Amino acid sequence: MTTPATPAATELKKTALNLTHRALKARMVDFGGWDMPVEYPGAGGGLIAEHMAVRTGVGLFDVSHMGEIQFRGPGALAAVEHITMNHVSKLEDGQAHYSALLTPEGTFVDDILVHRLGANEYLLVVNAGTKDKDYAWIRKQVGTFPSIHISDYSSYYSQLALQGPRALDTLQKLTKADLGAIRNYRFTWGQVAGVHNVLIARTGYSGEDGFEVYIPSDEATTVKMWNALLDAGAEFGIRPCGLGARNTLRLEAGMSLYGHEISDEINVLEAGLDRFLKLDKGEFLGRDALVAAAEPERRLACLVLADPRAVALGSEPVRVDGAAVGRVTSGGYGYAVEASIVYAYVPVAHAAVGTEVAVDIFGDWVYGEIRPDPLYDPEGERIRA
Image (cartoon, rainbow, N blue to C red; front, side):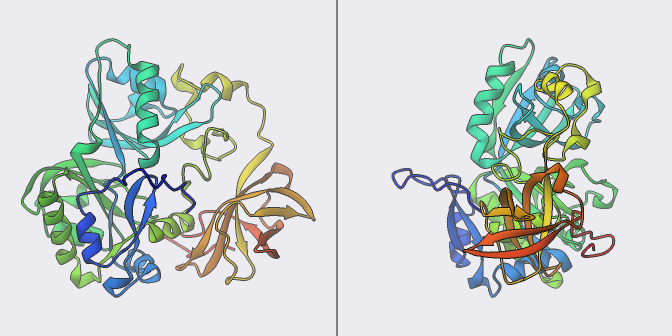
């Protein structure tokens, strides 16, 4: 991960679990202005153990740095529809979907999750490093729309992500809510570990089944929930997981990261996220540019390097047939697929599966090839040829 460091003079923001992470001897990093755990070597694990716990059992992440922006009122639907690319009016109560805030040019302000809490109420979950920018942008675009209140509730929520094939078994111990009845990208409200009015969403950023729970952000409640989840998952080998595993898991699952695969310089078509783009829903910001856009000249491609020991971190040059074609957006080792994974934008003419590529890693050109993504599929083959 290459999130820019915050200037030393700026005090890092902390989640309610900061002292808990330090007690677990987590390795802490500055992540977009937040003091966050990247891995927990002191908990008897570390990055590899955390990654594989999510793939084979269950892992627990503190993602309380994420932002939550709420729309309320009779005008909420029109406002959210105007600023996002997916079809909000098709959501049902208790349903969420992946979407994005777009610039007028059809590039990304941010990628988000939209939750329909009710007919006149929506919750947008945005990235931590862009939250303030997103909120200001939203206010500028729809702040004067009639009959809505737009509120930044980020400081009111702690968000914990329980991910892995045993996530349901773990969480079900702590709640009477029927978790099996919650479909993917659906949510409900319930009591969890004695905490009332918890939003329980079957969502995540790992490529596995899992749940994200939203609770009051005070330290006592958040620590209580964290410890209860770790205790409930002990029989399944649960591990606390940091941002390092979150990154390697999403690379295997083919999930984009803002500031890397998507940005305000990359449009939806180039990023290959047009399956979430609903041009038929009517007017919205960025629509006109995307309707008028020609076929993209570049595409995001998934590369697997021939030498699994060579790991790209980001920004390394990429060549096809000896010609420079782009730079790496993200790279890392996929511990479940046992491969060195690279994402990069390449010209459409060179984006076919099987195309040989070369990546400059510390001065050595390492060869690989373009593969279908995602590489990891929990329902089928772990790595695709």
